Image 1: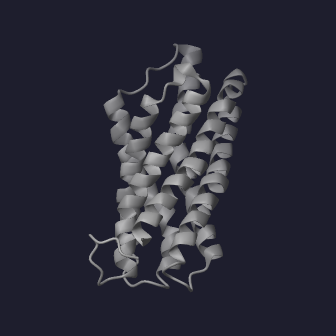
Image 2 (image 1 turned 90 degrees about the vertical axis):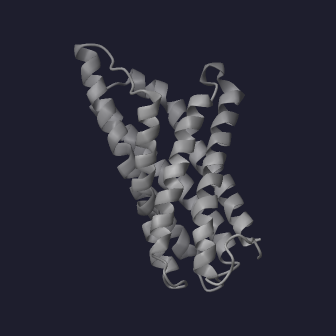
Image 3 (image 1 turned 180 degrees about the horizontal axis):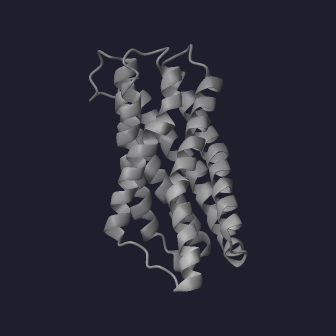
Length: 226
């Protein structure tokens, strides 16, 4: 079943790619905090962008291409992977801007008046939805350039990514609040991977429905036939 394979591919690829990116970032956080300064913050943000491009972008693109080529034989896996990685890199770059600016402002405030309090959870979740709705189309734009050669009305793919990643980012932010950070070790690693898998499944389930309709315009979207 194409739809179910698409959802599963997004789930495991986001778990492996995004999950590993987040865990590497957390592992590097203590060293970055000890070497405080604007330069360190900016370099950390750029490193996150690079990891997102390589680990998430390439891996998700490869997993998606494997499933997509079962329906679109003429689709170039290399083009899809390159488009996905490029979109992921740009999305990570844009997504890191708010947190980087906040970190720079917080560093300055800490020196002057002490650390700033984080926004309430509800505000963070609302911002997560907005961030996902904004970066989703960026991530999907490169894929649209490839997909439009194979499907009519491919512009809907960009809107599908906006909806999918609005939901996906909400899952990530809510899920990360549920990870048992104080326990450390395997529980944290498992928790992060599970949250990223859940986000990938949510994203894949939403834009997968649109993709199925683009590939097979006459098929009932409620059916999951191959």
